Length: 433
Ligand code: AMP
Ligand code: GLY
Image (tube, rainbow, N blue to C red):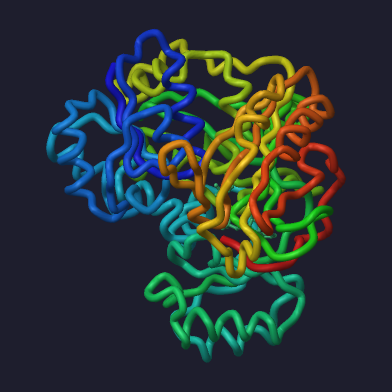
């Protein structure tokens, strides 16, 4: 198999790493990739919005499968472009990707198919109507931009002033362009979050290991929200009865809904769940794998990931079982100084070899570039320090020993990934998305 991976983050580095382990894989390429990926696979420049460029590259390379990491190309219709050209791709059509690309589409879909989710106060095209509605909602309130906002389109708040200021930024200042033209106001849910991701082949599906993301920048879920400061996976975050309930009340009705609406879904479908006292509820759908959830999932994956992806593309997942190792995995994200508000980039990264030499640790690159044997930061989330061990405590210990060896001026990382498993504060407040 020859496989092209689209994307440039830690998620894509983990995919490249895992794909290369398959005996059936002859070549793995990545576009655009990053510094670390370029050590493991040949990388090609690509603008993620350039669907033609991606299809041209896949044709030129004669890639047998293209696997798409991020949401932007999927929501822009990369799968449709590939299908038009007869190129095999793992990822949903633009229409199906609206489950992530439009919060309003997703909410209406969930309402049509009675999928448990936060109740909606309203969907607004006019800022005046949105401000007015703030007088009649309960708090905490969640304000969501309808479109993709690169992780900044959701605010959870108990402050009417903050809600109004966020609506102003979205709808009047148009900070996120058309993505903020329409907003959705919904109930704030409390509980622990769980990322439940399945791989679909158009008919059937297989569930991946459950993971928990840590969205806040600092320990104990303090500070601003981020794209994810770390994730962990272990079987005990998803007892069998809870998984049964998620399958019965959320996954199956979602698949039935997709079928009823003629959306033939091939790719990863991510259920962002809040485990409330009233049962699991959907916070969001993503039409792709999570980042950094993928790093934690693939560290535990005890199956041929390339084969599973190829079978999903062929509509032949059949008896594939995405088995996971018994223990636990952790991925700690090392972020640039100033992340998430104003990351300082261009810093040299040292200590990578020492970190990788820690037994059980694995370093995934995200915002890095390579110059010869030297690496420099290019983004907010720089590295994911992964570890796998017999249990969560042991995995965290390894990940933190390795993270402690990395030197980047001003960088920071959370010290409680996989350690603090305490219940979240009621609907942790802050912006995200
Ligand atoms: P989303 O982009 O919809 O995933 O939202 C990003 C994050 O905002 C989620 O992971 C939650 O931490 C938080 N969030 C979204 N919706 C809600 C909600 N209804 N109640 C509480 N927190 C939420
Ligand atoms: N870690 C959350 C996401 O990938 O959307």
